[in-house]
Amino acid sequence: MIDVRSGLTRFVERLGRRHRASEKRERPDGARERRFVQPHVDKSTHRYAPSFFEGRGFLNETHPKVEELVDDIRGKLEPGDHAKLYEAGYFARGPVLEIGRLHGRSTVVLAMGIRDGRGDGHLTSIEYDDRYLPWARRHLKSHRLLKRVTLLQGDSSTIVRGLDATFDTVFVDGDHSYDGVIADIGALEGRIAPTGVIMFHDYFHPLNETGEYGVRRAVDERKDDLGLEYRGRFGGIALFERVANRRARANPRMAARQVAHDDPGGREGGPRRSV
Ligand SMILES: C[S@@+](CC[C@H](N)C(=O)[O-])C[C@H]1O[C@@H](n2cnc3c(N)ncnc32)[C@H](O)[C@@H]1O
Image 1: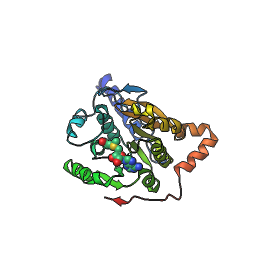
Image 2: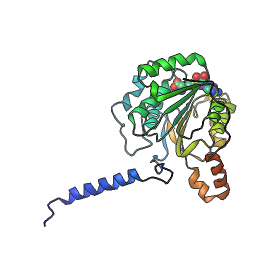
Image 3: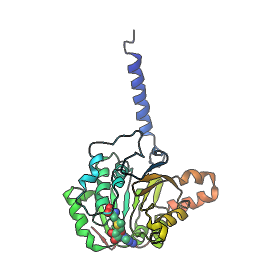
Image 4: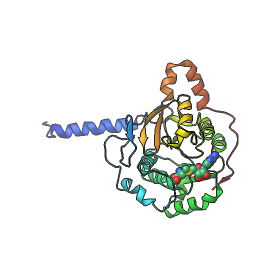
């Protein structure tokens, strides 16, 4: 029998099969293989560049409008942060953590990405100051995102140490002092999934030069311990990917430490209030 399908049709079908197979490819522990993260990109301006998918455009119609959609929420994000946070939420494959929410501007953006994305992410958001809680709740409610977020109140490093979770995506924007960031990073050790993503806000802020902020110093000192590799600047965000497992396989001492990190026992502490 003569095959009447054109070569082009067969080619497109073959591509589709290959794409579906690669989408399904999973490691034995259920996590998908390393997500695509575009190599180092420097976008300090508001112009957007993707990290987790190939191409130049936006993900959907909401993506370029995110900043406008949260314009009424008091916050400290830079223009370029909004699209990156939405993208990070969109591609999250598991639990998402935010440290430092103020009135919830970054919270709403991350939750919008989670809502519109393909993963099964849920956002846990930590804030120290109780005064901001009603604002965050109000904004999440008005965007119909309240059910996608767990709002925790208290000191971030204490709370994180008490959480029995490994996070796929983390946004750190809490205590900007050197000691504060060191404490957050210490608490996160062992709680970032292999190939997870972590974003540090204000890593590029000029106050890092005077020592008033210690974000850059703390991150630079500790990033290797966490197995973080720099993936670019987006607004005020420094984006890192956790690649420790790959390195750990090549280094038995690091592998032993990694096992301890990935299976931490005896976690203590807990949030003051869960909403
Ligand atoms: C720069 S603001 C966060 C801005 C917010 N991400 C936004 O989108 O506008 C920093 C927040 O971190 C909170 N914070 C400071 N130290 C903290 C700590 N140790 N634990 C939890 N939150 C903390 C502050 O109360 C403040 O609301």
